[in-house]
Amino acid sequence: MIGHNVVGRGPRHVLVLHGWLGDSEVFAPALSSLDLDAFTYTFMDYRGYGRSLEQNGAYTLDEISRDAQALVDHLGWGRFAILGHSMGGAAALRLAVDAPGRVTALIAATPVPASGVPMPSEGQQLFGNAVRADEARQGILNWTTGGRYTPAWARGSAARLARFARPEAMGGYLDAWTKANFAGEARGLSIPILVIVGEHDGGVTAEAMHATYLADYPNAILHVLPACGHYPMQEVPILFASEVERFLDAHMPV
Image (spheres, helix red, strand yellow):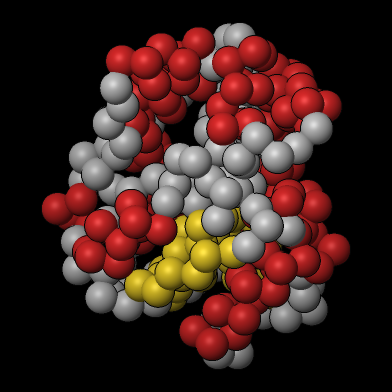
């Protein structure tokens, strides 16, 4: 079984999918602000990350979807919502397409779209270097948060990634999310979708979300959070948790 951590005891179920530059522990600062009597959250780690560090695989979005479906079956969940961050946003869309009727709502936090993220050669080099190099990882972390934080934050995040993500997995997933190409399959997805972006995110902008998520999904809405960039669950955890659960309360009746 894929590595995961179940938190809460509520009757409404939420599967949480992390991004590329971090395992499921990226959500830890927000845990104390979640209503664990109303919801049960399961934080999944992809193959090669976190609690699944030693699990090998193809490192694709399709594989994440298959692992997620096996996990929710193992947990005995029928219908559930998904919260996906960054690369996990694209993985959440893949899962929603693959499991029609089971996914009740989707929250895409600073997400990658189903069309992937084509990069110029400089970006390809930076992100490719980040598979193994802490300096490149720190550069991405600073760029996507507006360069507003102490260097110790980026150093610590990069150092954790070195311990809890295998380079071969990062390399595989980098190809998966940058070259994602299932926008045609996902277009028209009608479940409620909340798209969250941070005002200081240099990579995922409101304009990009209007051109992808809001253009393709009729029930998608966009919230721009102040005072944060690409990691709102770390930068503004109370606000992030409040946005998540306000949306879930509206779209996941008990």
